[in-house]
Image (cartoon, rainbow, N blue to C red):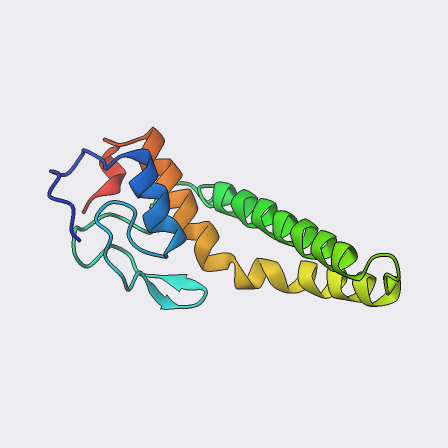
Amino acid sequence: MPDASPPGSRPPAGRLLARAVTLRCPRCGARGLFLSWFRMKEHCDRCGFALQRGEAEDYWLGGMMFNIVLSEMLAVIVVAAAVLASWPAVPWNVVWVGAVLLMIGAPFLLYPLSRTTWLAFDLLFRPKHESHYR
């Protein structure tokens, strides 16, 4: 459902993050933010929210941080679940190989989620920044 808020305002934090987790525009909830798995559009088609910030090259460092944290959390949860499910006869070689493959693949799988989550956090902490809208 679109957000009727005027440009420069923002939805509540919970709604911002819920939209980000579902790969929607953090501001209005629109779908279709990505041109491909690794490439976002310039702006949200519905509300004009700038998805490509146009700031210094280091803007997406926060998104990379989210990607690393999410990947690490996923790996810990999956490995812990595998160990607990197979206890006491844990196949350590299988767990080790699975963990390595997960740590290589998870950043690629979680890439879109990390981008939208970072946009939501940016909007949460800088709701009226001039670079947010076209």
